[in-house]
Image 1 (cartoon, rainbow, N blue to C red):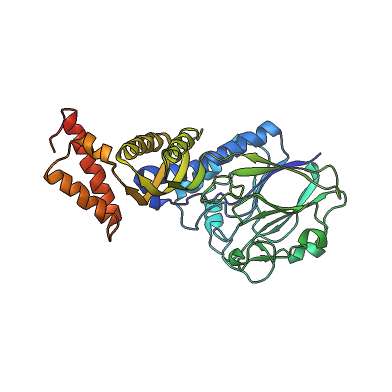
Image 2: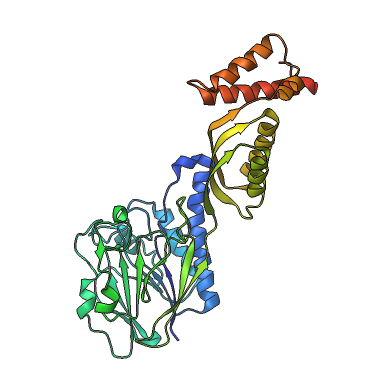
Length: 374
């Protein structure tokens, strides 16, 4: 029974500048680490090949060092890797692929599908029909040649393409690199391995997007997986099993805090995220000063635990209770300042007022504890 791992959209060399100098490079490094895990999984499962359906690299201009590191990351699997150029790493006349060959960086077991021609692997029982992009955008369906391609009798016909299945994916993400939704049927393919869509998605029994193996967006679309594909014989329906492989999960939460139990639930939710993640958290609603102190402690723990924690607190107002103010022992001028800051949260600069109110409350707590004077 031939068995493959189907993956795509590694985008090695991608930068994450929005996350700063500490977290951005770590996220970029995670993509190489995920390739190493794919190699280890391919060896563990004893698959016949790893199919990489485009966008191995994020750009043509990545450094020679990063290029070499990618091919070193594949060393954990000695079987064939079949890599297809996508829109980010198209097989131009002078491309990252020609540079890799010139640097002698491509291992012997890595097969570059740079031209649209049948690649037979007779000893393994299959033939690859690739549709490499030779420019970033194409308005023609580059997989059309599959329909009339002749492959040796008895070999599985495996298509490898990178683009957008027309009429299936959301209209606003359809790329100028179209793929006929009936391609697998028209070309008598046993399996069509696709890349470009970063989530895992079944188009039909024989046509799948694997998605990127290392999640890179705040979308719940099955990213962070590879596909384990088994085929009994030509003509049989494939057995496809997604396997989680990514290092970081990306979570985007929007929560509204109105009562104490809302904050309790949020803190529990943050504490129960089991693995280091990239979290974008937007909070709205109201908190008293005691709740704000608890929230900051919870956010501090989460920031230390996770790779990235982005917090948008613009919609969160601090509303000190009379008990809060009494506990702070703020009288005279400080009592007036607290009142002014409470009013400002209803006006033009709520974020500034909320932050100032939080700082003032902290200073007053320190004074009570014998720390810095306010």
